[in-house]
Image (cartoon, rainbow, N blue to C red; front, side, top):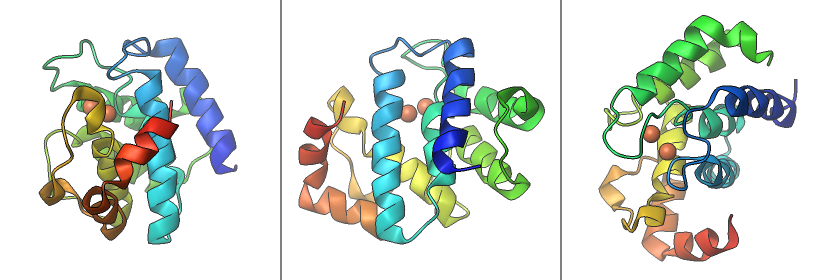
Length: 162
Ligand SMILES: [Fe+2]
Ligand SMILES: [Fe+2]
């Protein structure tokens, strides 16, 4: 199954079950920007984009509010680990493991165990300007993301993405 096909299956599932899709902060527009940033980082890092593309649509979809909701990452991870068959996207077990880890700890860890997870967290953080927060270099893990933060390129990219 291609990355786009898996993304489309995930998006269908997410839109049918999301509690956060209409949020202007943690909803669909954020997920699309995280996908774009993730694909860009994957190209620049020479990585397969599958994990970060699926992460984009899954990491915040079970948020219950736009404030403090520390359970939203673990809820998304539980969904991936227990109910993936309901999504209908064929994804290898090792990718699902990375995806669940990336979702579970995306707000509680700053120590990604792999480059795939690092890409996920960096793509999410590059979208911080949407809430008026400038990305801080020390919280990024990939050279590609650090270069984007250092150069201020995210400001240009952000205005191109919707
Ligand atoms: Fe989140
Ligand atoms: Fe997010």
